[in-house]
Amino acid sequence: MRQLVVLGTASQVPTRTRNHNGYLLRWDGEGLLFDPGEGTQRQMIHAGVSANMITRICLTHVHGDHCFGLPGVLSRMALDAVPHPVHLHFPSSGGDVVRALVSVSTPGVDLRLHPHGEAGPVGDGLEVQPLKHRIETYGYRLVEPDGRTLLPERLQAAGISGPETGRLQRQGSLAGVRLDDVSAARPGQRFAFVMDTAPCRGAEELADGVDLLVAESTFADDDAGLAGQYRHLTAGQAGELAAHAGARTLVLTHFSARYGGDATLLSAQARARAGTAAVIAAEDLQRIGFPRRRRWSPGAALQRGPVTASMPNPSFSPVSQGGHS
Image (cartoon, rainbow, N blue to C red; front, side, top):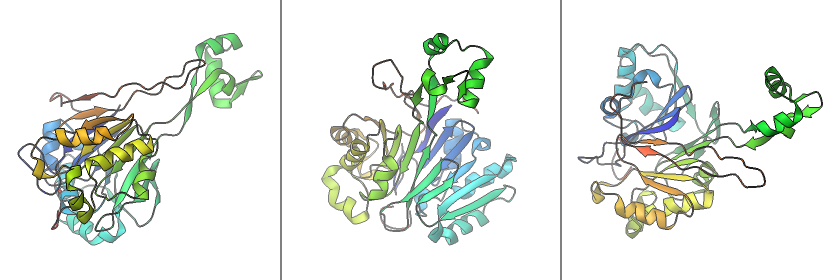
């Protein structure tokens, strides 16, 4: 399953309906926890998310609303005796803060620290790009390798069936039949996480062609001056980012408390500039599925399926240091 579980959607100041940041990406056998702000452990309980499913924790930067929930999450993982290694990715300049947060959590987790200080790959299919905030900040991009979809009618015409199909996939050709002759290209799915930043090249590279883009939308367009001062995106800028990148779905989050719990204005401003991208204003404890894979049909372009979003199913089991952060 590939699904985004939204644990918190507030920026510096939480509200009655919005907790500090926190996002869990379920990606096949991995669980990537992004920017666990204060209260993330409790939000996981409300969302029905097990600490055991977290395999990576990714911090964009070390402002408190993006990392102060780390000790609680790690303590819960220790309490639950999580058996697998947990990889923690973070900007190298935030090392002192990260080590302090880790030091106050309960020992017992096989935690492996991975600081990064430049653009590039940091894990299997996971890469970072620098963003433009008031301290060193990086966004994340997760990419599935491209593959191929077998076409039954072409397999039948080529006389390939049963175990021969598997051999053809492994070998690339069989009895004069090439895999390319009986299959169509299948683009891998892509995810991007763009948090606290002014518009910049790094954000554009992260968002390029993704299926699901999570982007901050701290301010309304009318407050563009504040956004520029604190190096954040407005809703309209988030929409433009999605449009220019060709993203299929844009998930808005990290809302300023000045707008209360209603993101209607922000989502409308983003939607007006998002081009063909679907726009979702995230709510705490919401689950957002990936758009269905693009479908191949003879003589036609790849088709796009809809995205799904839902509020939490309780039976499911499987954060700022001054100024606007």
